[in-house]
Amino acid sequence: EAQVTQNPRYLITVTGKKLTVTCSQNMNHEYMSWYRQDPGLGLRQIYYSMNVEVTDKGDVPEGYKVSRKEKRNFPLILESPSPNQTSLYFCASSFEGADTEAFFGQGTRLTVV
Amino acid sequence: GIQVEQSPPDLILQEGANSTLRCNFSDSVNNLQWFHQNPWGQLINLFYIPSGTKQNGRLSATTVATERYSLLYISSSQTTDSGVYFCAVEETGANNLFFGTGTRLTVIP
Image 1 (spheres, rainbow over the protein chains, first blue to last red):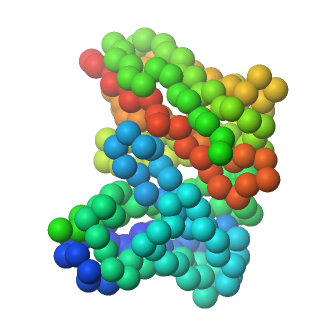
Image 2: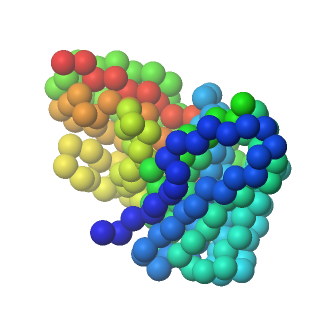
C-alpha cells in the first residue's frame, strides 16, 4: 500500500531534550516536506527536499533541522525543543515538486513542556 | 507571499444537504489541491485541480485559475464528511504549498 509513515504519532518531551520525528514514503517520490499545524494558522511549511541531499527552508524553519540521505526517508530533528514548538506535525511527499499531488502522513502530535 | 482565503470558516449542515466551499488566492498558481482533515487529524487529498472541473462521487471541484478561485461542492452530505477542508496552492516559481486556514464542516444527522 502506498503510504507516508510518521513516527511517533504522539510525543511528550521536556524543553531542551533533542528529538527526531521520522518520515518514510514507499512511493519513490522525489519531493518531501514537513509542515506544522497550529490553531488559526493552518499548515505552514518547515522544510522541504527536492531530492536526496537537496533540502531548503520553508516558511518557519527556525528551531528545526532535516536531512535527506535516502530517497524514502526525511527525518525532522528538533535539537533543543521549546514549548512554542508544541504542534501537530505532518510529513508529505509528492512525485516531483510541490506542483504534483501531495500525500500526507498520519501526523505527529508533539507537546514540549 | 501568496494569500489563500477560504470561506466560510465554519459551516453546519443537516445530513443530505448540499454545500459549496470557496478558495480565493491572490496570485497565479501552478496547482491547487483540496484536502479533507477528518476528526482524527488525518489529511486526505481530495482533488489535484490546477484548472477545470473534476468529480469524485458526491464531491466535485472547479478551479478558474484566471479568476483566482476554486470551489468544492459537496452534495448529499453525510456525517462522515465532517472535518476541516483545506485548499492549498503552489505559487508559480515557488516549491511550497501554501494552505488556507480551512473551512470547518459539521454535518448533523
